[in-house]
Image (cartoon, rainbow, N blue to C red; front, side, top):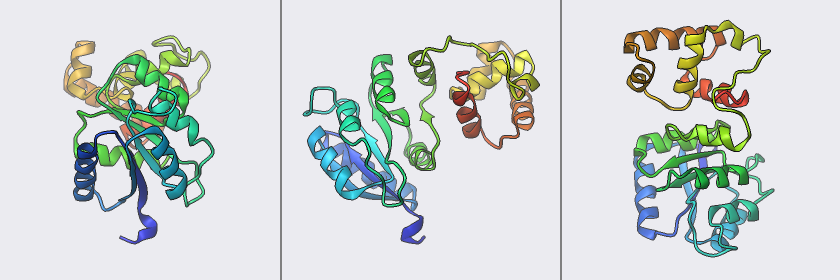
Length: 227
C-alpha cells in the first residue's frame, strides 16, 4: 500500500505501555494506519498534533496537564489544525469510561466519535478509518448520550422527512437500535422479535434508504437526530 493511501494517526494517552500496545495492535490489524506521533499529556498532545498534522487523533478523555479538562483541553488547543491532506484533524475518543458526562464533554468539544477500551483491535482499526473518512463512530449505546447532549428528545421522529416516511413504525424502531450499535440479538431481545425478523427489517431499511451498511445508517440517523 502506498504511503499516500495511509491515514496518519497520533496516539494520546498518559499510559506509555497502553500506547505501545495500541501501536503494536494497529500495526498488525491494518496497513491503512500509520502512527506518526504520541503524547501523554495535554501540552505534549497539542504540540505533536500541530507538528505532525495527522488525519486522526486517538484521544484519551482523562489526561494530565492543561486546564484540568483532559481530552477536551486537547481539542480546544488543537482547533483549526488541518491534516497534511488539508482536511480538519478528526478526533476519536478512546476511554475506559462510558459515563455520559465524559462522552458529552468531548463530543461537545469537537470529537468525531467515542469508543471504550473494551473495543477489539480490529474494531478499533475500523473505527479510526471510518473517522478519517468522515463517519461518526460510537461504542454501542453511547450514541444516545450524544442525542441528549444536543437537545433532541429520545426517540423523537422528524415530522417531515420523505426518506423516513418510507419506513414502517417497526422499521424505525429497528433502525434506531441498529444505528446506536446494538447487535441483531440485542435488538431482538429489546423488541421481543426474532433475530430473523430483525435481519428482514434491517434489509428493508437499508433498501428503502438506499444505504449499503449499518455504518452509513448510523451517520444517516445522527444527521437527523434520530438516535
